[in-house]
Length: 203
Image (cartoon, rainbow, N blue to C red):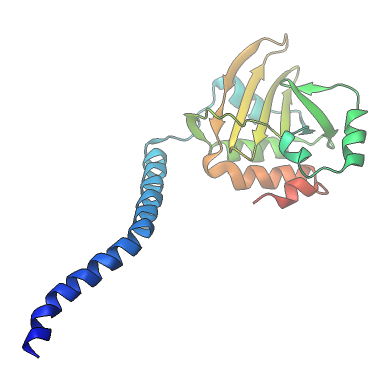
């Protein structure tokens, strides 16, 4: 009995070591995930909402109309049928900020511009540099002959905002992250293209 009691601490130490060895990969994975969450939280804590220049704000505030474009995206191509690809290939060339247009939605009015402006207020001012940027949707907001293009990639959560004056001179250009604007921008994209399967599938 005494011998068993003397051996008990050594047995407990051994079992603890075995348990730690088994749990070590799980603990390491959890630590890595927590570190990633901490980095994201720190970035969001120090980031600021996007602030647009006066010209872009003016166009969004006093828009005459808004054009909506479904852009050709490599990500969409992964789930596109051969028949759909053939139809797209036969479309005449039309580009928005160097991205080919797949479909054009019905022109919309000032209300959509107001909704876009509200959504952009939730975007991240920090410039988003990604290897993906493959936008699937674009909005062109017009005020007279000046316009602002908003191209959105929901896969890397980034967008391109470019404003041109009536003579096509670029006044300002942004490449921000979507941040909290993603749900609103995705809802507006689905509203513009209600039958789009790829947009419906996005989370």
